[in-house]
Length: 163
Image 1 (cartoon, rainbow, N blue to C red):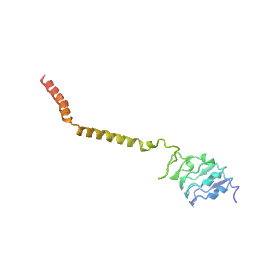
Image 2 (cartoon, rainbow, N blue to C red):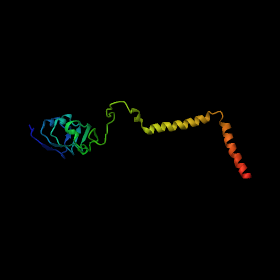
Image 3 (tube, rainbow, N blue to C red):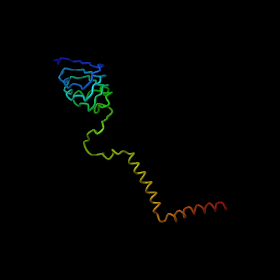
């Protein structure tokens, strides 16, 4: 019945519960401010149908899930969604995904990079140390090489003292 409504500001009202998808019926809505409430749940995908929507603010609520994509939702800035720790997706500058969810990848490339350089360096470093230790322990010539190497140094030192 409020199809001619253009501006709706319900901020700072302690509203709780989900955002009603019936707001999409307000086809002439240009500004919707639902900030600083206790709204929860996901932002209804139906709100993408509001083609005249120029201002949208749901910051500082308890919203979760993906931010709807398409039409006007691509024009809203990061601050329209801040303060909702469970929201993720564009246009948020910080891409944050809840446990178990991750962004869809187009192909399987770069999946090995998910381990990160720290894990690779840990494996490489421990492999080198283990290789050196085991190589020393199982080398049958270790005693001869040890005496030969240190024996020369000891002889050179003695010769230097005598001269």
